Image (cartoon, rainbow, N blue to C red; front, side, top):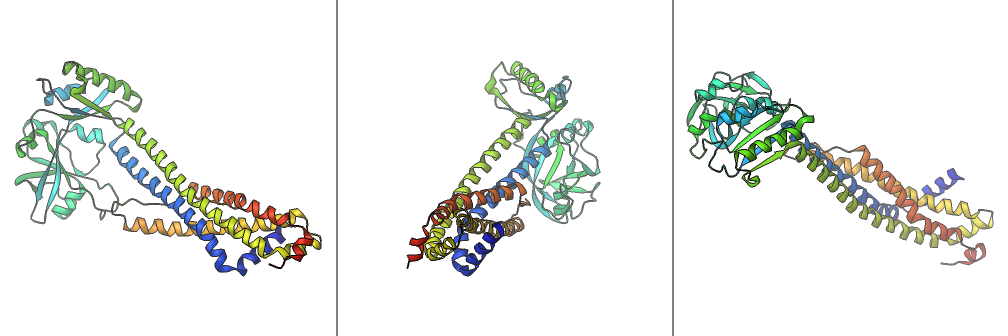
Length: 393
């Protein structure tokens, strides 16, 4: 009976190709909305989480808003690492400067910091070394540059020992960071890292006092204790005024982002689900029309012995096939759309078709087909043979 119902359903669908396609259109649009929107949200979330994870989840960032007449010095930051729960601490100040060589000139972000910065942020070197304590103490004009600045301003990666002009001041390149992507043609931000004391002399508006620094805990499991210890030290330093500074816990930021992303995906999926419901209403509408058109056929089948279950199965199968065919086409179009979006997206984020979302779309489509096919199928099955045979349309 099942195979016969499938054959008859397919015959009915193929005999009215345009009408069947227009009926599927609502499902196609609904599935595309569901798959594409959720995949975009998932891809963007993965990209953001990846960037946050690259920074490290055992990272604390402190911003000083009011030093209360007791500003932090470089030696104060170094002493923080002597704490049991704090592994490393490094001051950070940033400015935008013109980076120039005989090859090219570009605008770059320059960071003033110390050697601990590389350890905290897990920076990997392509060549050379990172900043040393002697560089900080002697205000040395040395720089560690990232792959983006090396390629865009100096023209190649092997530039250790060469010089680059930052805001007109010559700096010797002592290290080059590894490219974040194995494909070196991928565009990276242009960044340089110089001794904190050197940047103070290079850029006028950078204060000598430390107003921002980063801290790494000895382990992810000790993050909370490290944060509490750091908070207590800052409170003691700034007259127990909690508004004088702020501490950002990187792992808390990551958890918050994951929560926001889950909510966003759920919300977008719900919006797309409404489109599928609209498509289901279209299926029910066209199936009711089909039942009316085939009233005499139903009467003949009942007259020769077809039971209520057989008739109901036939029309329910037809609704289910329309829904699943629309789902399959929608998934195919979604794959094409995601490929196109990934190709034109400038941020380098790859949007992929998640199999989890695909199976949700299939399950939802099956549910829509059955839910909105039951009423027309039941209406067809309740037809009385005599009245059905007398029907003239």
